[in-house]
Image (tube, rainbow, N blue to C red; front, side):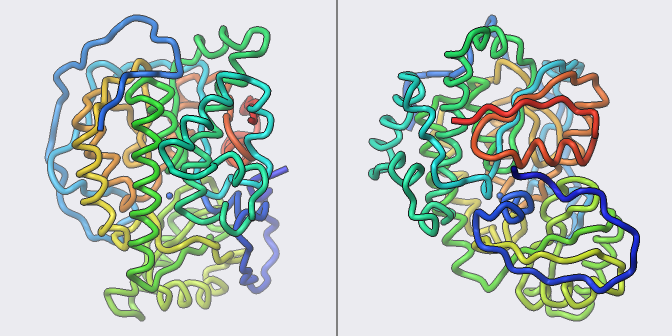
Amino acid sequence: MLVAPSRFPLQRFPPRRLRLAPGSPMASTLAILRPSAPAPLARPRGRVAAPATARVALSSRSRYSSARVSLGSEVAVGDALFADYKPTTAFLFPGQGAQTVGMGAEAQSVPAAAKLFNQANDILGYDLLDLCTNGPKEKLDSTVISQPAIYVTSLAAVEVLRARDGGEDVINSVDVTCGLSLGEYTALAFAGAFSFEDGLKLVKLRGEAMQDASDAANSAMVSVIGLDSEKVQELCDAANEEVDEKERVQIANFLCPGNYAVSGGVKGIEVVEAKAKSFKARMTVRLAVAGAFHTSFMQPAVSRLESALAATEIRTPRIPVISNVDAQPHSDPDTIKQILARQVTSPVQWETTVKTLMGKGLEKSYELGPGKVIAGILKRINKGAIIENIGA
């Protein structure tokens, strides 16, 4: 079972520096980065028109700021359609790191789910199901394969649920959705913002662009365990004082209390690891990912995503989809495109997202897709959270 790290003891001892193989349970928990006919996987409950959206220009901030992220121009920070959403039931979709050899096998007993894998093969140009069910693990763990694999398997899980007794009722009861990094694309597809096919094309390009950006720079990620976000930011600031601009680090994933991922140049990451002891971290865990996801190291991927998004039909989601960038729902298609393009260079605000949903009255969540990473994170944020896993 994949879970987030449990409550940490207060003993003072040197932090351990671990290196995890891609797809291992700890790595999975910590690693958490042309229009076709509409085919939303969720049944629309009435059409909604995109409202005029309040806009404001965000001030430019340092690329190493952990609090706010500049999207480069005007972005929507208020949303008339979803401003007063009151969540009760949520679908949550995992991101890269949740993949495991054998996923997708259960989906083959459900025709609608199996069809998604067949459609994916035509779009991707390779047998995705074979890689999901048989590996090899090293290939499935690669950024270019794991992202499409998780996207398809997660949406197949929706169809697995739909085929169960009462499954359709559960799906129709969902009134908010979100996903961790890559999972945001899955959430948007579920909410009908774009078709399964268009979403897969975007995810395929996203994985390729992020891999290429990683290959162009010597960068890495490390999880810092046992500190609050303020202390991790202080640790990053201290590390940045000792390295060149190109090696600097920042918090990339705000996952849950005591678990924050830091991205940046390899030298900066090494300083973070070396200084963690003096900041009373429990341990640091070097993540087995291609590079410094959710930082400006991914900037080369942005223009490619912008071009692909410009050519993709995006519609107003039928339910709120919470953005990783600002932990807010957005209904305007142009705003959604802009945020998706900048998501790869912006910190993931998952902790804020979950706390906001809980604070607004969320009653139950479903994690759809491989693994139980999100369930573990939710329990770290709120022990009383009710969440059910739906695999495929």
